[in-house]
Amino acid sequence: MKLQTIVPLHSEKERIDYASTLFLIGSCFVENIGKKFQYYQFQTLQNPLGILFHPEAIENFIVRSVEQKKYKATDVFNFNERWHCFDAHSDLSDPSKDKLLANLNGALHNTRNQLENATHVIITLGTAWVYRNIESQKRVANCHKVPQKKFTKELLSKEEIEESLNQIIANIRKVNENASVIFTISPVRHLKDGFVENQRSKAKLISAVGKIMQVTSNNRNLHYFPAFEIMLDELRDYRFYVEDMVHPNNLAIDYIWEKFKNVWVAEKAESVMKAVEEIQKGLSHRPFNEDSDQHQLFLKSLNEKISALNKEFPFMKFKP
Image (tube, rainbow, N blue to C red; front, side):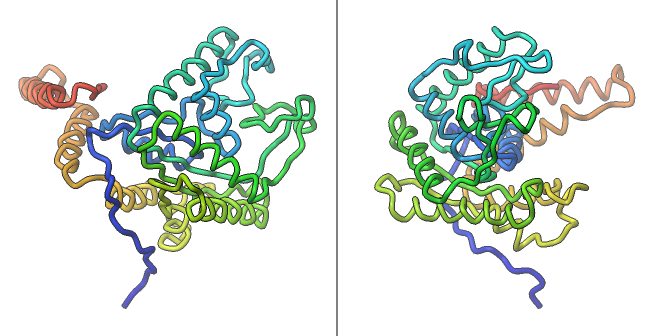
């Protein structure tokens, strides 16, 4: 008896291993996958400007990074005793204007470097709803709790999304012709936009991604991973959500991660992942007696395991 419908998947050829370099950008879901890669000590750079929800925000950042168009004082503003940038998430906001600008421009520099060397670029689209700043007439990545009357709300057309995605791909290809670009749609529902409005938004994103993968002349190494479909079809039960009934819980995240891993992570990486996980669990262990001989032997063994991995993979950084 079948009690679940399964989204069909197949393993990709250009799979991820510990020689791979990853760049991840986009909505909340890319954060969940990114944390898994970080936990297992892969070489990653994730959301340097914080979470970016819509395609134009991602396009703007990728283009600025590739062109190295630095942020200036005119690109930031002060509100509620903090400095903000409409291109970035509020996680980057800071009481110091200079520090914010330094972080913004550092993100541009790091992103350009990562894109040049990336074997895989993972992009998660969250919504097609955008906010336009009335004063500047520019669409923003984040409103930073500036009063709503300062913005108008718009739904991107499928054609506008397609243009953004094509610009993202074209700019990645300017600095890296060979990276595998993996699109996903975030399964997180944006119910503040409205139930019907959220469905319209997701439908436009899915349709636009499908179109560019079919017709773009640069579709080599373009891929789609059905995270949205897995969440809504295979995990169609509220027991897979946190209390807000919108975001996937840890069980759902782990389930989708396993699906992603089976498609995209090379089998030869699994033994290293197991060794890394053993160390991570060891580092999180809290002894009853830190001074005991048994615990000192445990620490010695753990440090030996870290040293052995670091000899082969010097980029790994374990934190107690």
